[in-house]
Amino acid sequence: TRILKLAACQVGAVNSNDPRPKTLNRLIKLLEDAAAQGADVACFPEVTFTTFFPRFLIPEAELEKWFEDGDVTTNPDTKPIFDKARELGVDICVGYAEAVNGTKVLAKDGGDCFNTCIYYHAKTGAVLSKYRKVHLPGDYEPFPDPDAINQLEKRYFKPGNLGFEAFRVPDFEGQPIFGMMICNDRRWAEAWRVLGLQGVEVVLCGFNTTGWAPDMWGSPKDQAPKEAEEMAVFQHKLSMQGHSYTNSCFSVSAARCGYDDGKFLMIANSCITNPQGQIIAETKTMGDEVVVAECDLDLCKPGKERTFDFKRHRRLEHYGRITSQ
Ligand code: CDT
Image 1 (cartoon, rainbow, N blue to C red):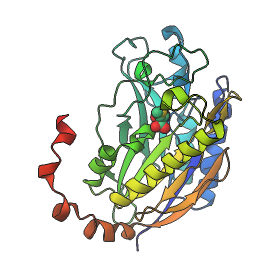
Image 2: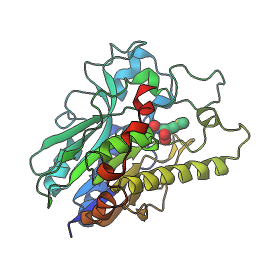
Image 3: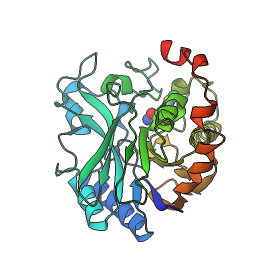
Image 4: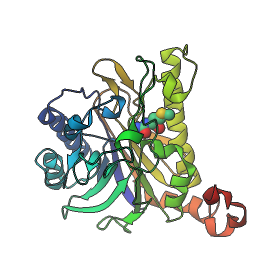
């Protein structure tokens, strides 16, 4: 057995005007809770530090406050959560809006702004890996309907340029292989398979998924909000479960959820799944909540060595279209 305790730190509503110290205190409390439950690694959501701002059309001059510029582990606006991770000895995966050279360069082709997450190694204070979201959903221009829910990720971010690089985490027994993805990536088999081909044992994925956005999903405008939310939750779990199974890995998904600004609904159901595709821990609320699961990474082996032994069973000669169109 190779036991690792994985945690999903779900973050409830974060409003547009919430002061950063308030949000940081909530994140720290979640991390303390994860540590108290014995977590080795805690996964936080996509764009953890602010409300999910891509729902708004924001003038370029005002973008700065939504992005983190520079090193998040030392920037005073974000440092406290990393300091807490060090103090508690819990590794963390945290998502944030990254501005490489400030947001001023944000133009039609995107500035050097990415939807990013990092894996922070508590013991050494090192960033073991950085991932920039590859699959950016939504649009550049908002919908004409003023009541539509927008997701302007194509306006604010460039597609990630770091690929899906798996990495090993020292200290943990057997130096397990981790991979990261962000929200919409979890719906794409390609993202998982690229990690799967590197032998990934744990996939960490923060997310922000709107509960009701008929224009975004292309669903009927008269769809009942409750029905839309249930479908979004179903498809979220389906993605985590199905892809964890076909790549024989554990996965942790952490939601930013609840009603942002009292009106924008984001789904919850942060979960931890095993290599059989079963959910072994799941949040029950729409607010700040931690779930922890004891994961025996040796359970990745049967799938990797039998059913999904890629070397023996994959047939590359039939997969060309995946990268050629
Ligand atoms: N944040 C993010 O990527 N959200 C998307 C919304 C998709 S809308 C079709 C998601 O995949 O959950």
